[in-house]
Image 1 (tube, rainbow, N blue to C red):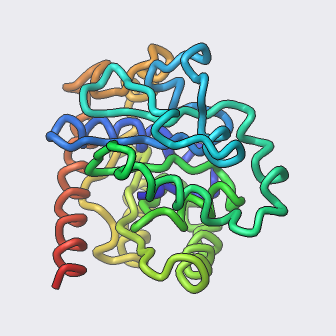
Image 2: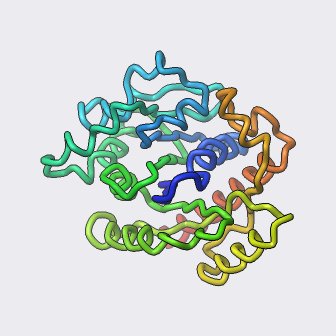
Amino acid sequence: MAIANQKGGVGKTTTAINLGTALAAVGERVLLVDADPQGNASTGLGVPKARRTTTLYDVLVGGAPMGSAIVNTAVPGLDIIPADADLSGAEIELSGHSRRSYLLREAVSRLAADGHQYNYLLIDCPPSLNLLTVNAMTAADAVLVPLQCEFFALEGLTQLMRTVELVRGSLNPALEIQGVVLTMYDRRNSLSEQVAADVRGHFGDKVYDAVIPRNVRVSEAPSFGKPALIYDLKCAGSQAYLRLAREVVRREGARRAKIAA
């Protein structure tokens, strides 16, 4: 599942970290792929630069097996493929590669053969619709879109949807939008309620019931190298991510059942 939105500051990495942790908490084996050169998902899960000896850059550009880049986190059941600033050069270095859009997909396809078994693979995309995001969408079965409850929430989303359609049409016909998750919701602010209503009116049942509130504890957690669920399980943000994880599992179960039928 690619977690994508070309706008920055919408909660992509926070959602990737905490959804991954919540899925692990309900018994799933999860691999989080940090596809953002800023490496914030790696930092937020307490993976120091010294442990990022093999990164997503080495997998995409150097051809390293994906399994060789896996780093265990402090969360049982949650592993990560880390990233660092080297990844920012991947787009230029891969520009002449004939299969540049399929590199992540091919690396993922070899994971199981190499003995690495996961129920969920989450890809934290960069805040742009570049080659890394296209690789993520080509490798993914579905896209999860974090959307902040602010005035310009829907602005620019058309471009993301167009990219999904282009990837579906030319690179990955099975790709679908699994859902839109509303983030940074402030129930004291009438604008949040208005934006939420607009988004639900536009996307219907694609919008998850779980809404991620603005929450100080969720904002503090990355500075301690911990997911919010480890930092403060009882806070409103952590509980919201647990609800989101249950919804994701239900929707994914329905998607797989539909394919099997």
